Length: 345
Length: 252
Ligand code: SF4
Ligand code: SF4
Ligand code: SF4
Ligand code: SF4
Ligand code: SF4
Image (cartoon, chains in turn green, orange):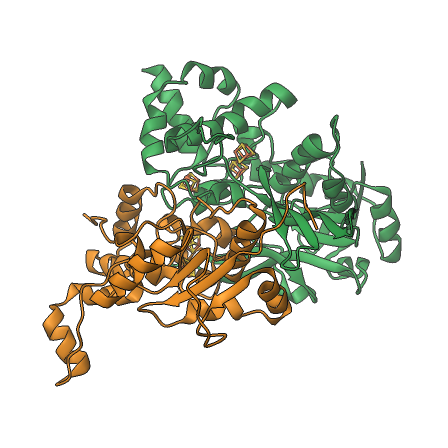
């Protein structure tokens, strides 16, 4: 990895004025007086706040859109043609925290480095210039350090750490190296390294929320019938909010939309959630997971067991976005600790 | 043209209005780009908003509005005898709609309040399904154009017609909307059927449940949350009653 330092005010000159930029924008204030941020397009750097703690939504939709047309069919005479469009327009996303970049790395495993690569995802991912930034403090309820998602070594183009008047910058791609030729960068000094490590050590020591996930896949198997699922399942609204804001949830449904002149039809993909009532309903109408508790359980099973079996690591990056948006107060650290308590009893 | 080997139908459609604002009927004609196609895909034999002609020969009856008079009951029964498929269009037809608020009051007093010395014959407001069997329900105040178009595809091509089973929250979240509970407002999104694309929360107003309940809503947990957030039973009841869609649900 190549490191540099860059003066803060110089950094933003890297970006081309005609490329769409996305960053953490303040969109409001919640009832506790805390600012609410979202990843949204911006045109000037004063519109974003890189000191943000967390965003309400992950930036997933820029890689896996909530709604996407997979293909369009046109019918003419007795024939038909199919048109497929991939999004290739370059885009810059600035300010992703380590959890979100780790989320992207996990999505890469599912959609890019796999037997059946997904061109819709790959074109978006490869044409997005990702600039990450280290968090200053753990976010509300965040437990990224427990799932190894509080640091990143790849999956980005540039990664910044705020060291006062300058950014300590990791360069993660050739295109990032080339882009930095436009501005003044400085070599890393011994002192810079010390400051950087000091900041990171302080951050890593400041997590309040932790969960032990080492033996979680086995524990989940043992606790398959646990009352803990009923307890949390009774609260669950089956609303899918958790999966919508999650940086790694990728489930979807596909529907057919026929135009009113009946000459065109679009196949539209829409993100879905395993908590929704008919997620496991099959042709013929049988629903394999009719109770909210079962569906909630399987959400945890995919995040913390199934994914581990396939990829050797949990899918969850510990951002606690699901926990914060859940009106019923269901959050991973409480649910997992409950299971662990159950086992100790 | 055939599609997947299926021969299209050109069904005869009749549109009827009962007690309601006729806004849902207007949704049939809304959206100029597709209006001509819509009108040529089906044969409209009765539709007051579009023409004054009316025939008794139809396959599909689209019924808008609730029932609030005895003569409406008879009219509906006649429609059921004639039509192969009855569609209840809009929240009034599906649940009674805003009209149903009347049922909370003494009928005579309400009649006097509205019509003064010239009272009208009236009965408690009822949804269409309380009078005759309904084949397809499209809720919404007003109905969504996309669902109307999907209905037309269904009757012409026999393509599946299905309302989302999940609640409004899914569509709300897919629009990047900040949850209204976070900014101190009530919202029925978690128990209300999606399909509207959550315009109310996106516009800063909590959902009032115009589309009625999602499939198997978790009322118990939702009501507990609403109370915990500091809203009273009265506020909650008022909202649940507004479109008449949560009629029999007990708040406590
Ligand atoms: S866990 Fe919470 S956010 Fe997720 S579906 Fe259940 S109630 Fe909704
Ligand atoms: S499951 Fe929850 S905590 Fe884990 S990555 Fe998804 S939103 Fe974040
Ligand atoms: S199964 Fe559930 S937890 Fe897994 S990706 Fe799908 S929505 Fe997310
Ligand atoms: S605003 Fe309403 S619909 Fe949207 S997420 Fe919150 S409760 Fe659900
Ligand atoms: S958000 Fe609620 S009130 Fe608004 S249109 Fe949708 S269902 Fe109706």
